[in-house]
Every structure is written in structure tokens, then in C-alpha cells.
View 1 (cartoon, helix red, strand yellow):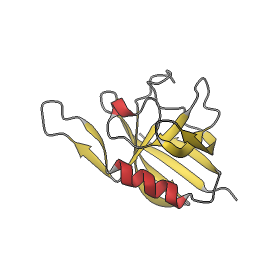
View 2 (cartoon, helix red, strand yellow):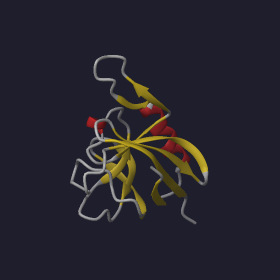
View 3 (tube, one colour):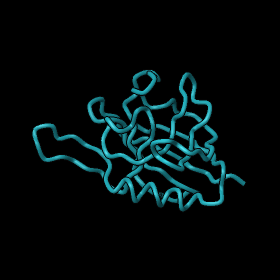
Length: 138
């Protein structure tokens, strides 16, 4: 049986991205950050909300991860580490907290991403595929 991953998008902010909650096997695991929805523009948009199969993959930049297969009009969309919208490149970032810079930008992102991503991969150890459902509630 494939592990079940659910991404529930909670908030979209065109300036700082789309934030959500990631659940694994029905248990809340972490926060997510994706780009805002710009109609599935390559490298600049969140991916369409629907169901996907994820496959274990070795990325030259991020190492071992899960690749979200068959995203319409897109390729190599993955889960990976990073803190800010500029780090997403159309992918899904994982973090244990929501960050907010206290400066003139008030930029928001996800924190503790490297450790959170490692925990994600540890939870999925032994699995080469997973089922992902993305829903939106905003």
C-alpha cells in the first residue's frame, strides 16, 4: 500500500506564496510553501490541486527526494528544502514553522526546512512511491 500524503492549502499571498499543511497517513506533519497560483506557469506557480503519484528520485541539487509525477505542463516538481518563495522554483518546500522577517519586507516563509525535509524522507523510508492529494480551502 502506498503512503498517503495530503497537502491542504490554507492561504495564498501573491507576494509571499501559498502556505499549507502537509499530512502523512492522516497525521499533520509540517507546513508547506509553494509559489502563488499563476495558472500553472512553469517554475513560477503552485501545481494544480488534484491527485498525483510521487516517485523516489535523486536530484542533482537536493539529493534523494520525491518527484511529483505527471503535473500537467510541468516537469521535475519535487518536495525539497528551502525557506522562501525564491527557493521553490515551482516545487513544494517543507518546514516546521512559519517565518516572518521583521524588516520593511515582512517576507514570510517556512523555517527549519532542512531538518523537516530529512524527517519527511525518514518517514517515507522503504517506500519508492506515495500518493499525494492537494486540496485548497482558501
